[in-house]
Length: 408
Image (cartoon, rainbow, N blue to C red; front, side, top):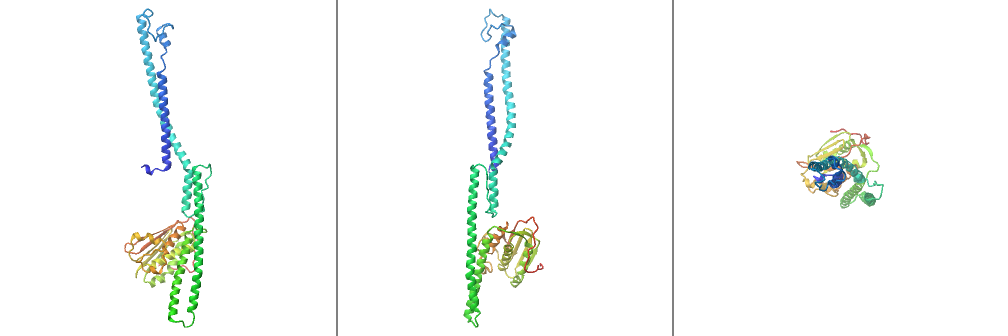
């Protein structure tokens, strides 16, 4: 049970227990001191003497000579003295009992108030930690530019917040340098590939090239195109891993309808039945990245399928689902499909891809505050689901280069 207690609850319990322990100790000390004071309090002999008409010169604590007191006076004095002693004992017992009862009630009331004050004090003490936690969660959402900026005395919590801010600064600089490196490297690698493609096309454009030269040129063009796709995928993956700087409203439902219908001819050529169902699905993000996300899912569903298979594309507010038939996939193999350069060897057409399709989907989903998950079908194939937060502001429809096609 205690392992499910929050830190604030534990601090409240500890502070409350200490407060009650201190109150109980104070009550016990007061009880002992009062008991000792009452025990040392003597009986007022003057009142006892006066009650039997004796003069002040007679000491009642000592034995009284018989010649000074008569039998009746002696009996009366003894009786009055015993009565005074009994009254004093009763008064002492009543006082101590009242102290325990009233002190216990007061301790209970003060204990309740102390627990409530301990709850408030623990919350105030943990407030900087809550700020650090909230900032860490926002940073986990890919916002490395934010800092805690905790103010106040330079105590342990202030030092913790400053250390966390320094760590965020170093991480932000490291990720920025990584993104710049990936972008620059991809740009530098695309330039020689473009030159190679141009040289090969020029060589093939010569009149009457030999069959060997043409076969070699076609092979080199295919290899060059694959390398260009690989570099574009790496650049897009690096771009998807960074925070969106200028998101704009878009309608992913309309975007999905356009891209899925554009791929219908390729699906039918492969003998696949494509079903598209979309609804207006607002999202704030990068339209280029979102188009690539949808395109990768549709391309994967076409490439990694079986003859006469099925593809179902469904887009509803906050969710995009692409389901395709295909070979049976073990559930433990699904998570690694979202890792770069990972392909299942028994999936049709995997040799033609780069192994970045689903990793780009996952990166783009994360950049838009969403998630991408996959689950194997009971009869084979795969279902990929992308979820994203629906914005409160209505989305502006995304403009496509072609008109909106009819849905099947």
